Image 1: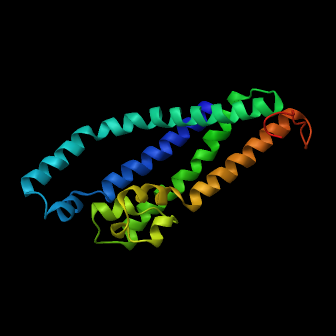
Image 2: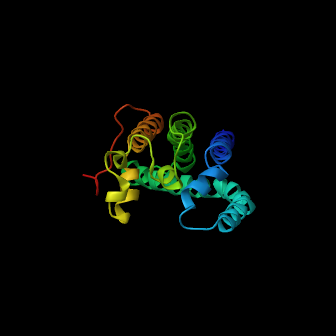
Image 3: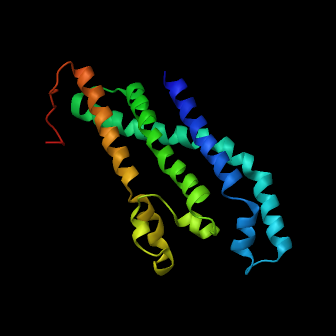
Length: 190
């Protein structure tokens, strides 16, 4: 089941990525974003370079998400082991994959936002927009550069991800302990 679910996750992410590159990150956006900085030939060269190497991004999707899911599953499995003396790596990996589907929603929201609601935008507008994030409260141009990413990460979808992850982790823990309460091992978490 993990392989099918992971494949479906990767397929969904790749579809959103392809649609975004095809319908939102169009050549005219690059010309409008970089017209003041580069000549038309330089912008065409940038677009050619982007088109030439975009296949690498598609290949890296499964690798990056696999590493991310493996790392989060390892952390959850170690926490489960330290608390309940059970190492449930495969089940935690399944939990993490299911929770990762949440991040398709903001990607789809961003795609539809720029397809239907915003017509004139630059690459900076696209980069700085993240649905329901703290960055939307501020003007990115008025912030220090180092603040942009942390404010993008502080968003509703990240909160939902952690809540779903905790809920699914608790379900696996209860299923494996055989009781609703679970017996905690005394130690560093008390």
